[in-house]
Length: 167
Image 1 (cartoon, helix red, strand yellow):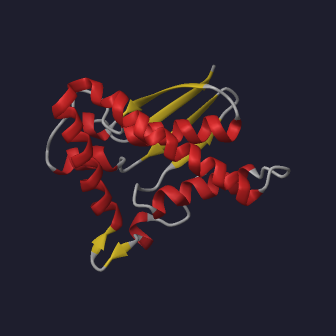
Image 2 (cartoon, one colour):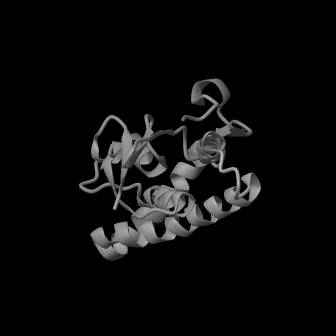
């Protein structure tokens, strides 16, 4: 599954400012402010801020699609397009038997900002988005997952990648 709108072909803008750029700065400032206050514990704090958002979107999506006909293709398309529409970037989701992989080739907003300001983090920085997807998947699939950000552009990786494994 992937976003239907391509970043290069149809980037959403407010005037000339790409929405992704505005979101990148907001989330970077949120992350760096919390990191300055609590250090590496910022990961857990920001993660817990994102999870309820994912839970809420999964619940709303289930109401919209309906309980009886959980159309997986429609749900994943909605999820991919929603993350793009709100300015987080284009994602690809790969569902496998026991795990789920979420990739963002260009990086999620916080990691992208690290790249643009030529800064490299020693820890993964896209905790909000990791929490969001964790909340969404656990709610939508009614499964428990262990999870982690296994690649992060903010740490110098070529993309951001989240991995969720069924427990």
